[in-house]
Image 1 (cartoon, rainbow, N blue to C red):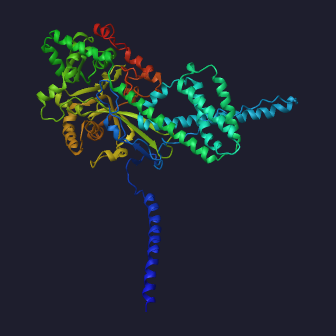
Image 2 (image 1 turned 60 degrees about the vertical axis):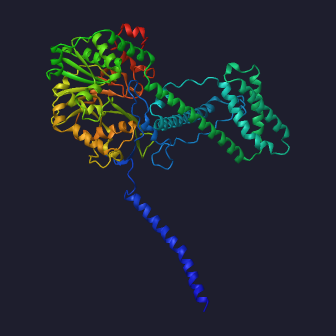
Image 3 (image 1 turned 135 degrees about the vertical axis):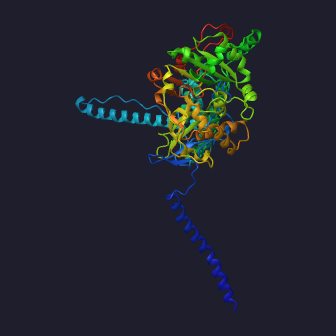
Length: 624
């Protein structure tokens, strides 16, 4: 009678493992089906026209912080992942291990005399050997270049254009003897614990300990080759011989390997720490105006209040409000940058007297810029400086955007899943800020304007832009179809969008203000702005990315790509002939031409339109 309940309990216990096994089998079938039918989350992965998947690294973008100096990594990029996980498809492994450095203490190969044989028999063998060696060397060089390229692209994900700048400014390693001493010390420390455990090697152990202490003493007192003592070659040779003897002993390779890996991990962490510090200083230099520029702005402001500027006459006001003239709008807080954009446009124009420029700036820089343009004439062109903040508070108080925002720049990394290391591209995408959407309200009497970023240099006459019939479109811009809305759908929220719609870039934009008002672009932008939640200034500015793309969806008129050559603020590989032929140059990126970090080869295009011989520039030592 008691055996029946016991059997029933045993059967129940057996059913538990069986159910678990069946559940595991069911999951193993469902998971492949989920990937087969693409049921995985869509965060960042899209299918392009080439029918291969791409990963768009967003929002790991840098938007420019206070673009007086422009190009800073702002708070929006702080949420970007520091490292890419190894398991993610197409990821560049930033924490990839590097092979340990080869031991300097290895014995030098002996050179044997050549045998006395017939030369006719030697030539074919030596030629074949030479070819094999040359192929091996080329293969090693190609592999080394591939590794360096992979490291640079992984670095770009975390630090952006700093990696390009640091690679371009990489200095030849100095103090090679000190580095050799450190390498010898690393290898000796790795072998010493294993040698100390071997019986009968007490003399070798004592010798290694003495050599290690000697190296440590020398390195503690000398950090450069010039400080090394005269007997350093003797110490290096002794360490080489001792390390060679240690390598000839039978040791536990696991212990040596573990020690070398520990040293490698410590070195990698230290290198990453110094790279982070260097990147911070780079971005600090990119966002900070030079001291001479601050001096110029303050001197101009002081002189403005010392002198009395009379109000403009009626003809001046009529020209600024007349749609018969060709109007340009520039948003800037940098007096030299705004001056150079206007000077380059006027110098390249065939009819400068027909040009009218409207500079929108903030209250802090308004007086300096206004005084600069009152004392520097640009042929017959008319220049009007507007205090954006004062204008909005006085005439457009209903809008929530009260301060001036300059064009925002975002770093976009696009990686192919199939070939992540070869097809990774980094671009700095420049888009309209929140302030741009108030331009139609500020210039109610104008029908068409050209909006210029203040990091643009105009090299050809742009009068042909006013002859373009954009039809029902609003914004004439150069499109960037390397990035489509479908690739950033996780940033667009629940708003309806066309996934095949291309992104576009600011820099030189032809704006039809009548069509803008007809399509209610500003009102639609304000409605979209309410849907995007932002907590602080950084998130507000980051919202300019989806808002600009969505507000002008299907309203972009694609301009010829030859109109603007972009990338001069981060790309070192731009062809100089293409730069000379382009109608305009756009220095988008962190390395602006007025900064010391600017790309030297591209500064000459910017400098040639700089006003020379100004009294205040000389007094403030503005040397560009």
